[in-house]
Image (cartoon, rainbow, N blue to C red; front, top):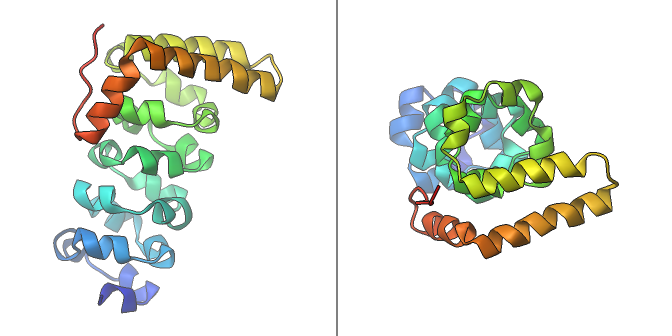
Length: 193
């Protein structure tokens, strides 16, 4: 693979056209974490949604900087796989723009870890519009709200156990089955209000 032989300086020197039209998804996967880290924010913003979806967990977790994650467009944020979403650091999640958070599909929101949810700032939440929240699964949103309201005043172990109770209830409610199937079929979930 020719991409593997590029230095980080050579990666950083690629034009946006070379990134967008020259790199195949296989070549994106072949980038080392150092090469992924060398991508400029302009180059990251030029990645196609297929290229973004091809990024490995290691590239997301250990290669992409917070600035690179912030440079993702709304369409790119929506193209992240649930595994990639889970690989984001709490710092990366806290730095995301409200517009990117609202672009997340329900399966991506459900994939957020407890630490990632806690990293979402009040400014990000305030920026959410009612229609953005309403577009998510009502069952999941009710459980998320109750879970977030109930875990703050309690110690970590009890909070985790409390949150897991909501996860169990969501599994019984049926939304998780549809969300999981939608993820497998790479489509938006069809949930009953």
